[in-house]
Image (cartoon, rainbow, N blue to C red; front, top):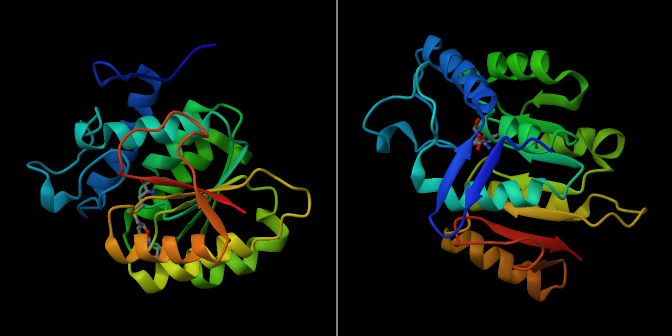
Length: 230
Ligand SMILES: C[S@@+](CC[C@H](N)C(=O)[O-])C[C@H]1O[C@@H](n2cnc3c(N)ncnc32)[C@H](O)[C@@H]1O
């Protein structure tokens, strides 16, 4: 099967398909046209930490997130339906939808940046009914859609508001999502280097709600963290 992304662990080199890079440029052009610097994401450092702003000619993702991307890609290949809190400009959404041509994607974003809705329209046009995004505060949007749209989700990526309060709300919603059909459900935590977030995860682990897993798929580094919902 054709692969849009290949990662060689020994050299830490990544290869991206031409198609993936072209679609990435499309998102980046929308960001450039919005005249709003890009928030950090799975592909690029936050604009404050980058030497140049991401624009319509930017393609290759920043090397600093290589292992996070490799983990994400390995995981995505095993999953059927990802719910992502924090769509931003859609780079992780695009990555998921190309790396796994079967996966469905449901994004939630408060759309605080003017590029967010246009990037979602761009992906909607490319991926049709495999893609959906709802806008608003995840605190309200997740429970609103949970019982109708999200029950089949086998992966919830928490990458929205990074305060400990927002993280706690998002992870509690993810844990409480009903699972009567016994789906093998995981939670991917983006901000896994934050001390308060790690402490919250330990607390939830002690209570028996989640379990940190390192062997579900090949996993490198500590940039992101995978939890199994118990
Ligand atoms: C780090 S970015 C997500 C990056 C994206 N997952 C990627 O890798 O391409 C975080 C996003 O979360 C959104 N966000 C922040 N607080 C939120 C909230 N309370 N509800 C929903 N989205 C929120 C922001 O608007 C921003 O677009």
